[in-house]
Length: 201
Ligand SMILES: [Zn+2]
Image (tube, rainbow, N blue to C red; front, top):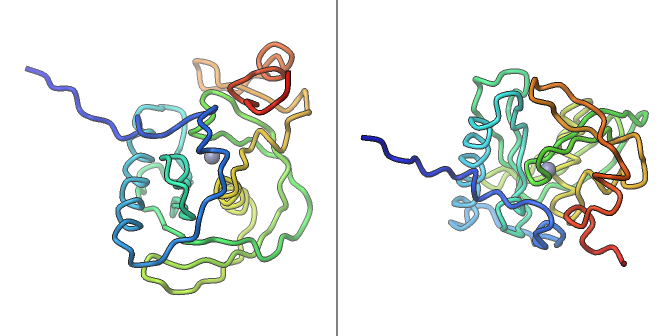
């Protein structure tokens, strides 16, 4: 006998879903609805990862499950696929960005199969609340800064592809061996209505 396991990764919404383009509203720590959303976010991240052999789920934002609420969850240690701990941050805000602009690959669970080489500031100062309502200020740099800035963008209806929209050389996909290979910009990106549903003509 076999039974099909229900998989919460199916709840992750993808482009061109308009909820990915909306600005999310603030939340209150301790609100049962907020706690429920956090649970669902962590489960969906882990389920997604199980289906994607070569990829790691570093973080998720609530709009990716269709909740336009200002919540993100960030993997405690992105260098260790066996560490399944995620840190929830409520109402995260960028106070300041610093350092050089760095270019690195980004992907997004809501933009399937596409990767991009995205410019981001090297460092950021972030303000947020923890799950139990404590105010925290954190200084992040490198990959963690990139990850958190990517997730805060989601809360403002912004996707990583928006930062590289006109950069013909910035788009990639994963091949079946898990290597990133350049995408044909004119064919796959430029007039792709899934990516840019609001574009005229
Ligand atoms: Zn994303």
